Image (cartoon, rainbow, N blue to C red; front, top):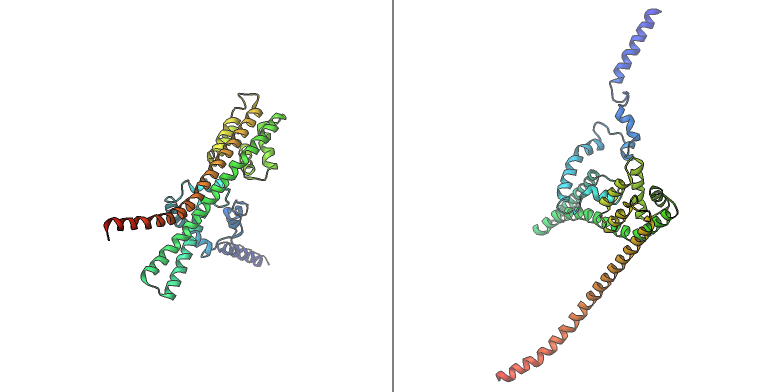
Length: 300
């Protein structure tokens, strides 16, 4: 009986060692076990295999990101990471470039298929094969730039209200950190989202001035620079609420001045087609007697 037990024990240990060396029965490594708790939910929900779409994506990801970054430097005015962080995009720069290059590659394959089916002339075929991927790539870049510019405009428009709320909270006895946290929790606009990031950075151990400085550098808005400069005076003055109220009034005046400039520019643009439509018929009518006068003096 004992030899059978010993043989069974040896077989059990040997089978365990053999099965543990295979991928199907092996215990997941520590990185795979920690993956569900990571920041990327897509990676957490998909475990790549040896030859899978995820493995090929991991291989092609650096090359696509480098290619997209090389092309994006010729187009983007700012760093891609800064623009993505400014718009609170869930994508990192590498993921954005991979998606951008992937869509351009899909457009290239679609244009090749259409050219192979229709067989147009060589200039039109070259334009379709080269122009469509470039157009798709530029469209993604343009969409991000428009989102970035629209967010900056919304932030600039919301800042007077944020400054007035800060002034009222500070005047009521709230601290600067508590005021920022209350506005971030109660607000629903773009400025509240940015202030939520500032409050999060303060909770991570950053000082209020450093967190507000990061927001100022990231937002790249003149009104934010002025508001952060006023908040930096919290230890140098006891009337910070009045200074914030004055700053909110100044920001509103700047917006009003900018709006008047835009209206004047649009009013001048309206007169351009009117002027052209008036001058062209007038020039035609004036040319008729002028030509007749030339014929009279020349005797022809």
